[in-house]
Length: 139
Image (cartoon, rainbow, N blue to C red; front, side, top):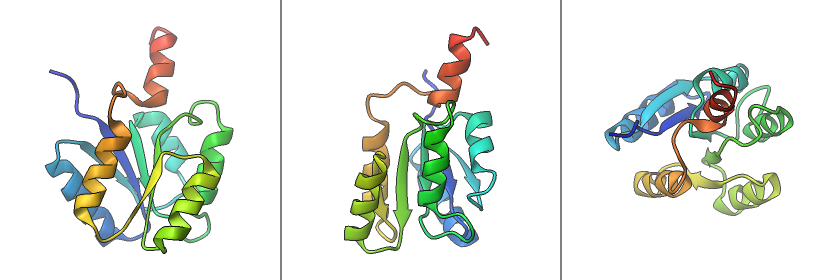
């Protein structure tokens, strides 16, 4: 039996984190949450998620800013990212394209969230980039 894909949800809204976690765990994913963009990079390195689902509008460091940080670091540059925001869908699409990430999901549509997460994970082995890096080093 293969391990469940791991997802890290990054959002400053505690209620949204809880609801998203419950929805994704019900789909069989292993879900961790982080309530700030700060520290998210370290969580990604430590826990090697297969996908990061992140809000765009967070205080101090936006989701877009966090994507920039992830792409500059060797161990996080290949992590799969979906933006998840209440922003206008056109703006989300434009941000995802500009950032070169795996996609976006407007908040408020659980069926679409389930579908886009599954699409982002389809055909990719579990373990995230950090786990694949460590495996290459014999860890």
